Image (cartoon, rainbow, N blue to C red; front, side):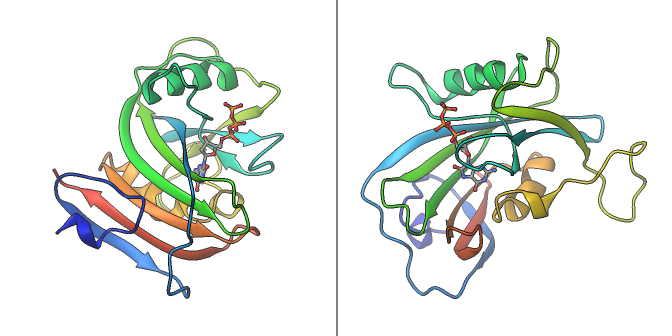
Length: 196
Ligand SMILES: Nc1nc2c([nH]c(=O)n2[C@H]2C[C@H](O)[C@@H](COP(=O)(O)OP(=O)(O)OP(=O)(O)O)O2)c(=O)[nH]1
């Protein structure tokens, strides 16, 4: 489909196949500037590594490891640095998705988040001041779970994650936008699979 149908903030050359869209709001929230962020996940052997955010933005939610891209860095470099700083590990990260994220009542900036994934890592996973890492099962409900590992805790994650996480788990590149209210409820969203 044509990318002109994608929401403001989404820039992509190639074919996008929309997979989810919705929300009660008729307009996309305005934004003045955009800041670059990263988010990185390790997915291996039926499990995914998430971190419980202990402080700051998103405190109390589980997420991948990431943060701001510094002025001297590429997103890939920032993703590697944040994974090391927040979980103590290194990994051959691959770009797998892009999330454009706008928070209502947060006027400062929109978030352009490059999402990375790796199937392996080196080093020892450690808890840091910012994140408490924990493995979760990627098995769907009803399927056999790994030992006593809990399923992905979507009710304790950013509300939009449930829309794109299945694409990440299936290794299907994606792009999307989510506008959220400050209490982590979805205002409006649009997600597409990148097929070229
Ligand atoms: N899973 C998920 N992550 C999100 C969403 N929106 C959003 O900003 N993020 C991620 C991107 C970043 O990894 C993180 C926000 O960065 P942060 O708050 O941890 O970074 P920071 O400003 O503290 O920067 P730094 O000190 O870690 O560099 O949240 C979302 O809707 N879902």
